[in-house]
Amino acid sequence: MVKSMSVAPKRSRRREAIINAARQVFFESGYTAVSMSSIAARLGGSKGALYNYFGNKEELFEALVRDFCTRWADGMLAGIVERYPAERLMGFAEPYLTHLFSEEGVKLISVLVSESHRNPRFSRIFYEVGPVRGREGLRAYLEACKAQGLINAPNCALAAVQFLALCRGSTDPELPLNLTLPATLTEIHAQATQAVDTFMRLYGAGSRRVVSSKLSASS
Image (cartoon, rainbow, N blue to C red):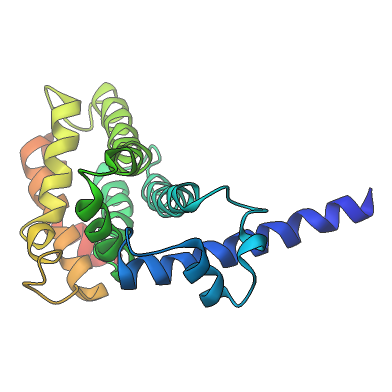
């Protein structure tokens, strides 16, 4: 029993190491040019050892996508609890932008776009595990805020989409196209603050519509 318990963490760490090595190779060479042999070479092991964890390259890349999107969505949703909306929306927006604008995020999206016609399933997995899960969690939170009279959005599903668009701003199309530098943490905070301020001015209830001073004081 003790032996089996110690094997599980070791296997988990090995699986994580494989995904990390694969991430480097996929980002450097793109999906099509990568083979299990090239990933094994980067990892410093045999190709046969990879097959103990992943049946093929497709399965390994899918695991990489799911790993990123799960961390992304978990980070966003961790800040969504039933408190004053402006504070909670900041707790959603900053992890959202930090992951989206990270080097890993930008490179992964680039690989997904290049493979979208040959392997659209990867894009679908990314979309459903990451953005859709985060958006639906945000929608549910906004519905709860509306029920408490904290916001007055007529359509919370649409409001969630609008908030995410406010968060991304113009950086979303510019960064993947290499037209701008990655945002710093300070810039991400400023962009998130502006998004929350604009959203609350539009949908905040009563005196809670103006929020920038509250956010600045709490940051």
